[in-house]
Length: 90
Image (cartoon, rainbow, N blue to C red; front, top):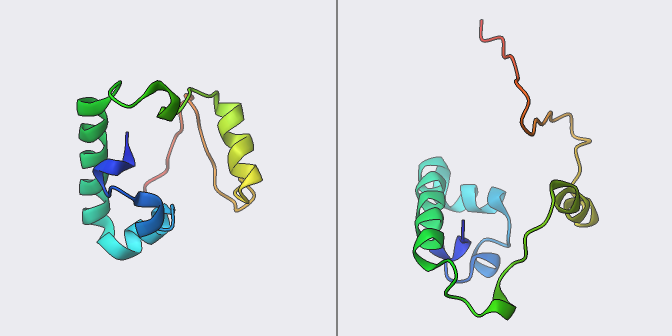
C-alpha cells in the first residue's frame, strides 16, 4: 500500500505513526484510509521514478529496521508469519 493515499505527507501529518493515525482518524477512519492507500498503490504502482521507489526487503530486514527504530517484540505481543494460530474465544 502507498500511504500517500491517506495523506500526501503521511510522515508529517501522522508523525509516521499508525497510533497517531488512529488517534486522529479513529478506527473507522483508519480502516478507510488504509483501503484508500491500497487503492492508491494499485492505481499508481510503477509510476514513480525508479530512484524514488521503495525496494523490496525480507521480513528479517524489516524486523531489523523496526528494532533500529526502537520497536521490538518485547511488549508481550505474539506474531505469526504464516503459521496457524488457534484462538480461544470463550
